[in-house]
Length: 237
Image 1 (spheres, helix red, strand yellow):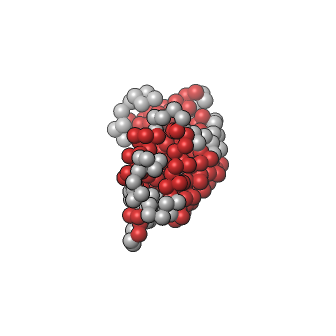
Image 2: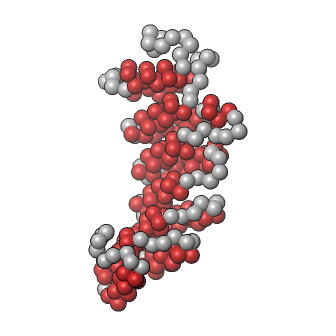
Image 3: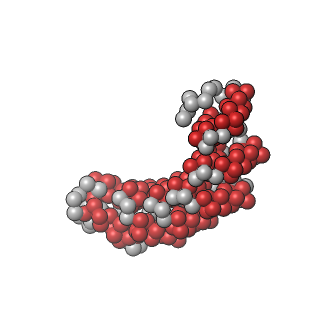
């Protein structure tokens, strides 16, 4: 490492070193996190959001999630220099979102929620609904419907407004699990929270009503969809 970087190397220099000298090396590529930690121990050096982002994406895409957890803890304790003022670094939420997505895909929800809580402490204001949707989608994918509903209520409690993706994810999950009453309740909640259903919302319910033999309910839902000017059943199935 010393042969490629000067003693006063910057985060930009280190990122270039990772990209050009380490990333594609067949032996050294898995040593990137050790080099990251070594760089952090250099008194004159400080990581920033560019090296944080690169390292998070690299560990997530190579499924080294045990190191990812340690990295997020490091970021929490050593914020980006952008955050030295009043406001947090604007890259913090996207960085954590990438990590949360990796955890949810792997079914590691304890780590996903820990990362979410850490992110909440670091960012300014409320989390973006897209991050919450990732967690809800993960719970639904792994059939943890109670956890998905619990997190949905947490969103609302923290004044994060659910969007159409939030509701469609929950509706589809309940339908696939033969819980049509809960799917309909979620459909009603959409309107309560000022979120207009789209073609996907209607088509999901229509499809599962028909599969469940509830023809009249399916037809009624189709009429409601056309009355809202959303097209015809099946266009987005």
